[in-house]
Image (cartoon, rainbow, N blue to C red):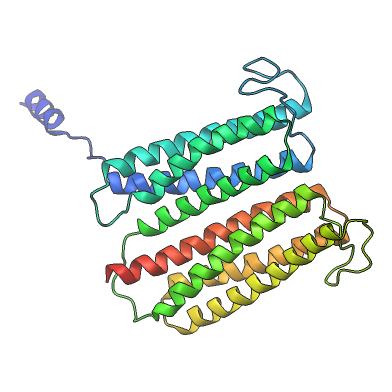
Length: 311
């Protein structure tokens, strides 16, 4: 009887069914983290001057495994992170396609991320083949930021609702959207400042100081970037104040506090870039925090907006 009971228990055992919704959220979160790490690694490649550490593509010095050269391995690590992020985004796209008729999780952000990923892979190869001109580098950065934003929105839209929240003003959702888009424009302008050689066009901070460059265009690029940064800071400060007073819930207030910390950190890193004359660590962190700030704003915007739609 005992043996029969054991066989009955084994036969009755069932593996838990795959929770596609939870798998989609996990994939979105992991893909977002991997893409943010990829952006930071791209900053390391650029700041250390190893953009051509692998002079060919998709191989490195004609090999699958690069030679024992620092520049080659810096760039190769960047490519490995890119492959990891790409795999996660493709898997997320497959899950989103499977759930494309589920009203609780819109599929378009993940599918759009897959489409931009295909363009991004081609841009990465073209950037190396053309020997890293600033124009393709800028488009490469824009595509990476768009993927980050789409993943953040997908993650926000897929969050399970946790009870009823207080009535929230709709204008705040629009304001958050404007602030998020402005932060993207700011990040893109920062990329152009770096790639155009305008990073130290204004040698002082917060004032521009006496420019030490011949080209006034570089000074204008730097002043424009700082003006955009001030505008984004003001927009974000207003959004966070409204969010805090709107009774939107502790989750939104926690996000607001996190964004305030990121904003202060980003301002300090921008000042460090100028005052310390572009150390590698501050340049890399400035880009990484810019991408994280953009992702956090999109996540907050998406969470706020999709909760309004679902109620």
